[in-house]
Image 1 (tube, rainbow, N blue to C red):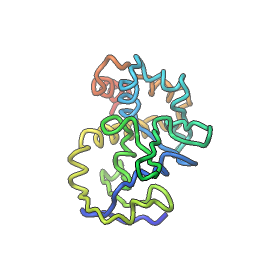
Image 2: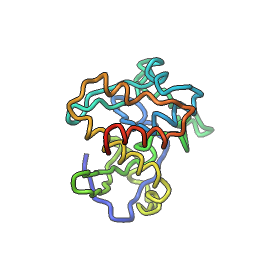
Image 3: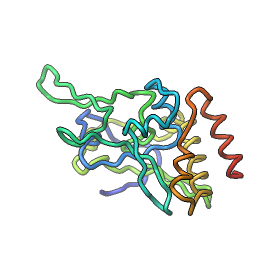
Length: 202
């Protein structure tokens, strides 16, 4: 899919088609995503997301094990938090049951992607269609990158700090990553994040 660098303004308007929440999509989530989803579901630990088969680990860049949403398989592949509703106009629309606060950061940002370089301390943002034929890409609804970044400032910071931990863990076995993703839902996320940063000397 074509990617375009974003400086400030970009056009997009979600039509709730649900295409980016179904099919062969791989929705990568970060450490804070795990925490807030587990809290939303009333779990005592993020480990329940894995034991309930809602989240699974896949191996990504540099051998790192990354959590992704485990799509349901029947009657077709779809996100477990996708809700389909048919409107009065008989059009089937897809809604996220985690919306607006607890959905993954990557979903909140779509169609904006983030490219972070921890070594150089730089980041850029790109416009990339969530799916090949995403109807929202042709909706002339003006959006501002600066507004989105301000609204998601804390989550963007948490994600960068998560990336820094992953960089420190390069080459570690899968079991180490499984421990990383076990968070206590009764303990504030930022405290646990600081403890992890201390453990990995960040």
